[in-house]
Length: 88
Image (cartoon, one colour):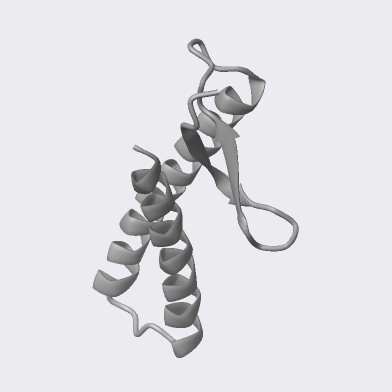
């Protein structure tokens, strides 16, 4: 094993990062699953970016609860995008 490890887009049960040996040339099941999860995470980030823009530009006053929800979701999307960027 060459030691090359891929950071997976999810955490272990103890909250620590999960890694997969990246020695496979074609990618195994877990590698493909990680690719799919990363794609879904990026799609969610794009959706949150669009929705937050609409929320902030909307004609109605935005409540603190709406803003808090939006900030939490944007934080999650940014965390996921940064994790994906670190794996590239």
